[in-house]
Length: 439
Image (cartoon, rainbow, N blue to C red):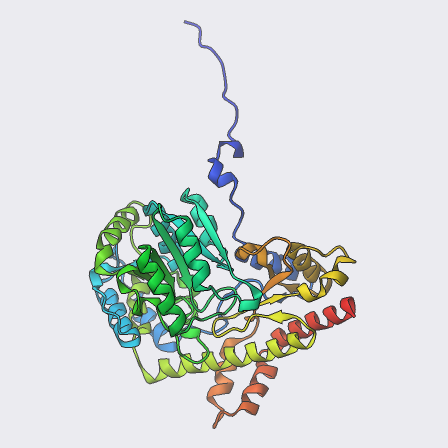
């Protein structure tokens, strides 16, 4: 029998699923890689794009990693039991929240765990605008609907209870979940007790599942983070990790804790994990236990980081306000979210009428890399940007602070000028650019 010779068409990107074809690279990772390329070409770039902690991992945590480097066995899918218990103990100490260690899951970053929640549940996702760049793309991958709740600049980009209720009422026939990130990326907004209580009433009324993304909790400038789980414990999942406040982004370890009412969800996520990442690196899980402890050195580290970030944010905000740039008042995190809407008419003369054009112009003309607000759920035409104030040597800044006694405002200002000079220079360049093109 004669063999028929034939060949199928070669594989190409059209063989990808439609939801993947629509997906763009993460904006934060893209701007970081693009900045590195430009620097390699010999250009001076101020890296205000990716929000990576500038501070070193605390010494006791790195020492614990060395101590446990020999650990090589697969750990339980949901995580090391002693680490899960330590996370519950920390939640009780800091927030007064009781959680069962069985309802804690350890994952390769809180980002993965938030995605797994979206993948596991049938629900509409509610997102305050602005929100972190990956929540909505994750929803797209999980094939779920997203409703944005737009905050206004007049309200300081704070989610308002009446807008939240309006969104819940509009979709009251559906299961709803919402990601509440406080302190917020990109705005730095942190919600107070009164606001959280008002949200909790609405969440309870509409049975909303809340993912409280608290990855920036320990970067609150005053050390005064408050979790929504204090007021809505039965419907709040808390995600956190060691990437931001402990400077260990590349270690890829996060956790998610659930109330007893959602034990079944943790069990389901464990089944997903068992068929995907199996378990998080054993040495890193053992090392992370030390990051949950209250020790004098760790508390000193956190306090110093908070002081540096708070003062840097204050100085940058002050400079930007002088050139009529609207800055959302930040209470924590690494970021400033700004608007140049006051200069729209004059910028339009240069054909700068969208945030993406504004961001690209700043990168090309003054070497300041930042991200437009569109990536965070803002309207494409809004002239808003996120600035990540992280392009400095955090180790040197911490050492300067630790060797200064007593710490007073003038000394802290000096430390920012000396050790965070590249960030201050980037802000000054941005201010000079605004003066030049809007005066």
